[in-house]
Length: 139
Image 1: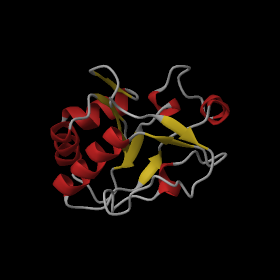
Image 2: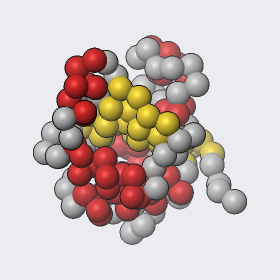
Image 3: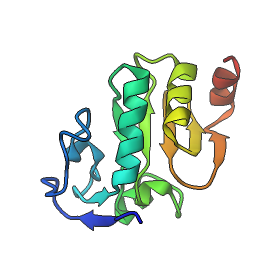
Image 4: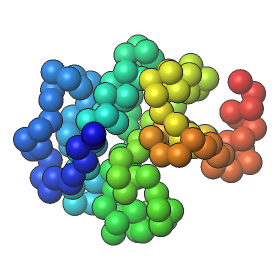
């Protein structure tokens, strides 16, 4: 059984630096209010993906409170309302990054021109726009 709950401050008492050494609670928190969605299974997959990719992840967006999600034009049922991450493609070979995330256990993939969206929602994938589709289909 997974334990999922929201923590209001970024000094999360259950943040395990030894378990997720490449990520901080503040980079996973909502950029608007600092709210954290604590989901150990997700973080374990993210750390596995980071280990497989062998390069740092620059997280553009992780958890979003409902206000921030609406403000940035996120889908009303966005996985970001729980926990999802958008990883910058800077310094990454896109196909290798995707394969590392898939192997780590992620099931939702959004392919964009400058980032890869990953989540543990229903198994699905989409392209952000036509240019993103052209970029990703070259791999």
